[in-house]
Length: 86
Image 1 (cartoon, rainbow, N blue to C red):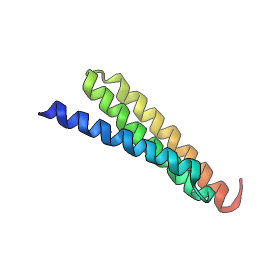
Image 2 (cartoon, rainbow, N blue to C red; image 1 turned 180 degrees about the vertical axis):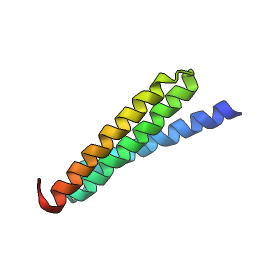
Image 3 (cartoon, rainbow, N blue to C red; image 1 turned 120 degrees about the horizontal axis):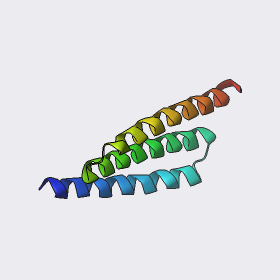
Image 4 (tube, helix red, strand yellow; image 1 turned 90 degrees about the vertical axis):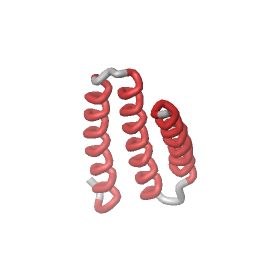
């Protein structure tokens, strides 16, 4: 039962990743594209966590942590640039 729920969660995450990619491509403004990029990184972090849980390898959680930190710094830089420039 739990395996089925994890697989359903993975399918939902993949569908939401596709929708975020569509928003990234057709977003009417740069702000929309930045939000879509942030959503894609969050969904990717969830997928990495799912992979770590399904394979039983904790090293993937370290990868997700580093990826999340780099993503946060990148989004802050993009937001600062959009607000007033670097």
